Figure (spheres, rainbow, N blue to C red):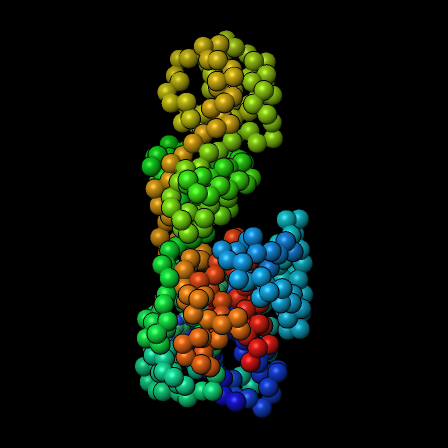
Length: 377
Ligand SMILES: Cc1cc2nc3c(=O)[nH]c(=O)nc-3n(C[C@H](O)[C@H](O)[C@H](O)COP(=O)(O)OP(=O)(O)OC[C@H]3O[C@@H](n4cnc5c(N)ncnc54)[C@H](O)[C@@H]3O)c2cc1C
């Protein structure tokens, strides 16, 4: 059997290794146009490679259709390639030495030892049982598309395959950047770079999302893991607003009492500087110069600090996003992830209209979907 795989991300590498192990006599070829394999995987998790999560369920994905796929033994596969993993306090799974480079190197070694062929060419066209590059045409019995999305194209996935996939007759659903900062209507240049621990409630009329974490102010927007998660929800529906609580560990009454206990004859930002950053306070309250704490109603102040609403305007661009929402329509693939339109074509990883939240869910899906396809071929 001749198997052609487009893309050397976690999905393509896993598919190649699993299929060659299953069918040792098969001829497996990976097509990758970047000089190095697995470039995005290398950059993942700030170079640490958050490859999966112990809290695994469909609620972390955009669709329940992945229910059985995500049960595939991703950690077991990594272990079989000599990659030991460890779990952090939040359940995120990393390679034991916290280096994504190790994952890429171990998978590369497996490719080499199994005799998997790598063709360093860009795939530009797809036919019934063949694919074409700028230089040649290659025939296969099975073709697996693992070309990723179009986020951070300098890491390889430049969205170039979408047109070729459409050429096969497939629909690509609306593509949007996600897991990225969000632009806001409000200007934050006065507190740009400031970080704080918050809880956030996002609402856009349909969906509601609540989480705790770090918020980072940017000149024209907001960032941080909680903002990344919300960007995915907004990308799938419409933009909305986020309400931040700068004192997530105490009730409004407790905060009111703390404010009342502070020295009332001090300027407000000085009086509160032991509990909240002065610049942030001045941004939230507007110009408070010359005003004393006693001039403010403590409960009203507590309410403002626990319910700061920010209107969002749009997600940042693909180049700043970790994933692409949208992709090959799931209606057009069978449960096995084989195309319903062109037999012997399979789609795995981010190229599909599947996305997960931040926390290892996207690499997990890339590997799990490859294992799933290898099981089904
Ligand atoms: C900075 C960053 C950090 C991230 N961190 C994490 C994390 O910690 N945990 C997590 O779960 N997810 C993370 N993600 C998301 C995750 O990396 C991706 O969802 C995952 O890599 C998708 O895997 P894939 O194999 O489907 O596609 P990719 O990893 O995108 O691989 C696709 C490959 O196909 C190649 N290709 C594309 N078109 C062609 C063509 N026409 N011809 C030949 N080759 C082609 C590309 O060059 C690329 O190498 C991160 C993303 C980014 C950008």
